Length: 199
Length: 153
Image (cartoon, rainbow over all chains, first blue to last red; front, side, top):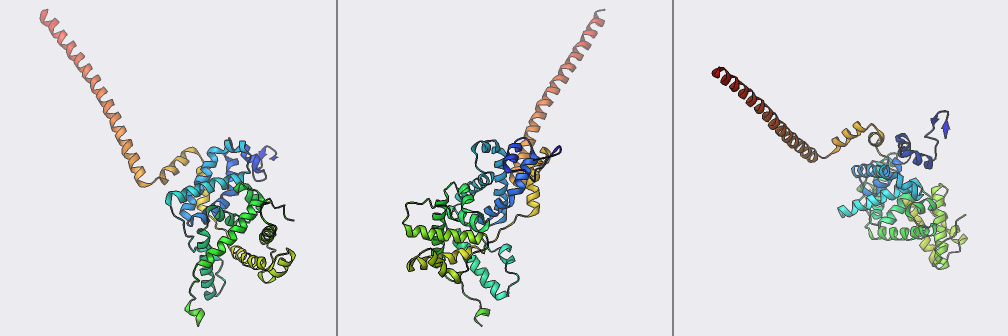
């Protein structure tokens, strides 16, 4: 979309920006602004800390910048392509470190509970910690599905494009994921109630 | 409405449960989902058996718990810094990359640079000495020749 002699980056479609991004840094900058937060969010949930999330997010966009000409030929939506790069980098990160990060209680957990009474906040935080720990023990593809569906609020069609699966396969995976998560939560011991709740 | 289920190898009752779970998830996404207390009419609508209803109830409760997850945002400083690194001027990007290198990498780079510089200086110095020595010798030879001529005369 062109306004006079100036190209309107904010109003342009992803495909337009990708085509310009090979020679136009501003076009890539617009794509970056659109997706840096979603990519970061996904990686944060998969790694559990800001430092690694920043490092891997930077690598996602550096890789995208280097390979953007290759991307154009393949025809996958740009957002889905970024998620695939992120997923692969996170998988390599886990493999290199041979560990699964337990997502720590962080300010984003507490932030949602500040308005509640302290006793309720403690119990809610414990419940959320159990949930996050159970998620972190799931296989990579199930973790990815949960993050894309419940944090990023993506549809099954969008998730299917990212994970390179049909919508029906995503529905089946979703069913199995919920069942696996239920089993994980059932196996976890319940957190002990605080003294203030017993009194 | 839901798109057709492409998992055709599943028995019909599993597909009904999958349809229910998918519809419920979509409603959660649009913030219009049925609350746990109202699940029963959903099970009737999808024709689930009692056993399937029990299964569905536990899974739907899990979905509601998952719906409490919230996005985590990066810091504005990080977003700005990375954007400058990706799209900024080349020299500033190099400086930023240098600054972000681990300390021992920068130390190794400095030592390597100093070694190369010292080697180049040695080579250059040797050449200068050779040139100076050559000129000095030529000057001495010329002076000696003049002395010999004067003596002969």
